[in-house]
Figure (tube, rainbow, N blue to C red):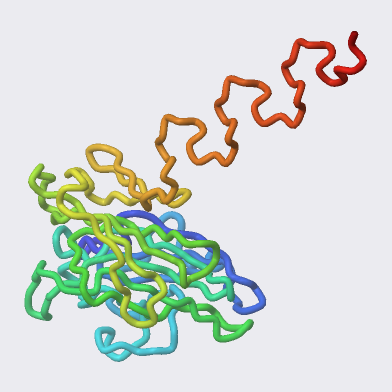
Length: 306
């Protein structure tokens, strides 16, 4: 952070637990970073100090977050944190060059498999220059690997989109029909402005719904058009509750499926009711008693009355 303003994330970490029967690191945290990396951390073994930051280092092996066995060319063929939004650089990672400022989202499938979703901005940097132009992907699903009960967990890239070109997306939010990855949707709000830009009224953010379960390429299921959201959404995230997605810009906008019930919004309290007497002022409507409401004492037995 001191050398290149490359601090971790611009938001926060997420905490989650795995089954201790499948890994030696069941208590985990995950966070992103301006360099476009995705980190997995063992909450039971945090080697840092409370009174100072770790010393700056360009040696990826000095990073003590959880990582897999793979080596990477951008670390000099050494292991290191997983780079998600390329290219990895020690510089060109702040202001409009930052690759991510969002908090990841965790999802656990019904079979126990854990996934962490990240949003960011892949750049066209080269080793020789900074370049804030962008390219896909902007949404990435990572898988939490658990090689054995005596082994630490680590992240690997599981799927990514191939069409989204975000500038500074908000944090992803996952909705689903229970713990079922095949029904999961990633919701992301993209402001369509750069970090250094303002929020002009002419620029409208976009809400995206991305299929969370596609095997290799994450597909966009839905996106708002330029008339549906107003400016004012930098770093914002949607909220999903009971099938309705709420977004906050310069106002609150809600999105949901159109009602299938033709009586939704009808002022008629009996609209769609199978009760033929619904709303009838006659208290005896539909009564099987032939004398309901009758004032004649002989109604039930006319022969007994003189």
